[in-house]
Image (cartoon, rainbow, N blue to C red):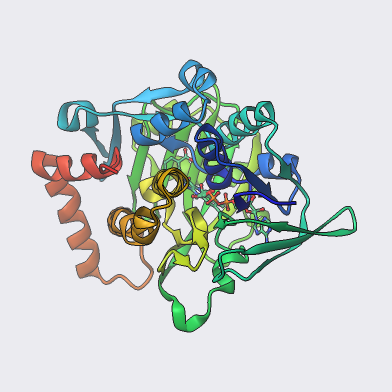
Length: 389
Ligand code: FAS
Ligand code: PHB
């Protein structure tokens, strides 16, 4: 098989890139190691920036997003039994949209199926070849049959544990990493959200986040130990711990119910530089990871895909490699802004085991400053709603 761009991975990065390339008349094939059902079963991000909404509209997935997405004009930061609202609309003129990654993936899958562009699910043993030549190749096994795709470019959209970043020689790539000494226990439940907007909680027992997927479905998180297992957290214990971390009004408003999904995610900050090697271009989690505190992971994947799709369109229209040659630097400039913000939000809101009494006092002082300073709230708001592309 021959195509112009081979995309590795059918998560949000790969699917969104595939759609934007289709819209630019650029042939592409997506290879995904898992089944479509498995990809849809993963519960991940829940909140998207206006820039991501615009890209999804351009990708042809607007109807359900605008019908079911919840526009949020602020969030609340809870500490010391009180809540401080951060008013995005007043401070930045912008808002964010609550619309789960699962729904985004479903919409992109459906949109792609109408284009006839191939997505090879359950593609095993994917390997990349000749990535520094002008004729890179992808080999894979499907239904027990070995096959090969010749292409012009490969987009590594295969996530943090994918093969794309791994194939880049160590001498050609530099990585930066910070692993956090705790995880997030996430629960999805068909119970009404605690509040109309997200509540981020700093509490001496640990961080908590009350989010949602709709007016009837909650997405809730609490900071947990790195060694915790799902078995340590039966539903009853989860709900009790969440109530202990919330202010009294929110704790009283909670409606408990059975968890539909429960998972523990480790938190890490990670960046690979450059995001390109020869004709291989990395996008999304394949190149960078942020702690989910700032709701940036999926949104960074979107801005990477915006830059890469533009650069590929320029190449096929003009044969110029100017934007391809600046892709990595351009994407990383925005990545590092989100890395800093996600690290800052994580540092502000979590209990760090190694923290001293001084550290906790400084953390509280920063929260109290945030509560009274409009410039401080504006700085948080403009990063949260998303910095310009
Ligand atoms: P993904 O990891 O989503 O997709 C990569 C795809 O490549 C997968 O389908 C994988 O099966 C496939 N793949 C891997 N190796 C392959 C191979 N060798 N061959 C073929 N295919 C291969 N972000 C937020 O903004 N908010 C959140 O709350 C949030 N929560 C998260 C919770 C968890 C547990 C995780 C892991 C991430 C979370 N994220 C969150 C970040 C997440 O949403 C990512 O940013 C987003 O999935 C990035 O999308 P992709 O880059 O497409 O990577
Ligand atoms: C979510 O709804 O899953 C969510 C929202 C905001 C975050 C993290 C996760 O910062």
